Amino acid sequence: MNNIYTKGQYVLYTKQNTNAKIIDVHCNDVIPYYTILIDKKEIQTVPKYLQKIVQKKVKKTKSKKKYKTKSKISRKIN
Image (tube, rainbow, N blue to C red; front, side, top):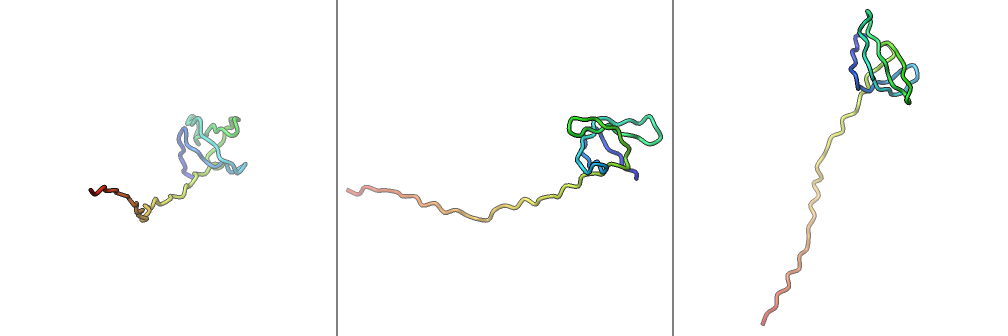
């Protein structure tokens, strides 16, 4: 796995099947390792236990409804 994650990125921690936030990246080893935050607890882990979170893109559609407003114009005829 050649996944490179960045500080501040949200990932899935597969050992606990939960979302985590990467708070530090350590590149002082052959394989970089990460410090992640889960429920206010810091854990150090390697990339094989992390997965990118894929978010579904939601299409924004404009409503084609047109609202008709009735305006009353009162005229005084003398």
